[in-house]
Image 1 (cartoon, rainbow, N blue to C red):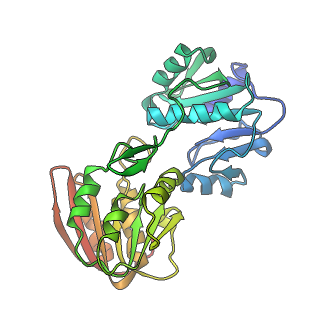
Image 2: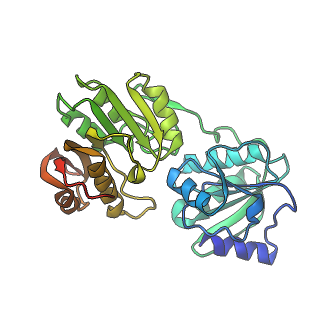
Amino acid sequence: MRSVRISHALDTGALSLPESGRIAVFRPRAGDDLSALPRDRVQIVTVFKPDHDAFAAQGYACVRKPDGAFAGALVCLPRAKAAALALIAQAMAAVPQGGQVIVDGQKTDGVDSVFKQCRAAGLTQGEALSKAHGKVFSIVAGPAPDGWAAVPQVVDGFTTLPGVFSADGPDRGSVLLAQALPEKLGARVADLGAGWGYLTRAILERPGVTEVQLIEADSDALDCARLNITDPRARFHWADATRFHPDRAFDTVVMNPPFHTTRDADPGLGAAFIRAAAAMLSPGGSLWMVGNRHLPYERVLAETFREVEQIGGDSAFRLYRAARPLKIRP
């Protein structure tokens, strides 16, 4: 969808690219076709490890944050509006004043609202091009409007950033899981999809824990976790949890796995987390997890662990304990 809009906009002259210089592409998703852009001049800017790895495998230069000035930029809008505006502000700062920043997004991701806000701020150039259930438009680089840049906030003693999961505070599922964790978890524990560290703090409160490894795909969330978790027993990994291989097995895995990468629920993502957890555990190890009640995790748990039990929850979430993994590789 993105490739159709961008190609059409460039072919018709609705948008143009700078003739020379680097082009920053902010937050494209794995599977996006960027072939309309000059590959040798493109640098992917993304904090999400699976996307970073997907584009790096195609030969693109990839970084987490802009490394200097760019001749132009393309912003691929995320779903959260605060994160979208912060990304636009970041792109505007990376391009010389008066330069062009192209903004592209799906209607389901709120591109109409973002376009209206950019137009109200006097940033837009021309009209938006609507195609393939989305919009693409350009804005003039310069100082971003007040309040657009990402500003850390402290919620319940934790630092978060716009765009990270549950940026406004701990989600209900994680709270339920933290309350249900047993007194003894074992010495080596992994927090898969650790986010900004809420569950890790609860893990570190259990006696006997000597090491917790936080494995998180969003480097913004992981940066927040580094501020929130200063305990020397914590180790931090910017990694895709479904592909992570520890140096040795864990006694326990704790997780509140994600269940979507778009607006649609994807039970397969949580299932991949469960299989990854089983592969990381020692033969007698245990998994403690929370999942949305409507997601069918019981089957994959039964396929990957010898012992599975539901240990609580509420109207929206189920809590599970699983033990003695069958060692099926993810």
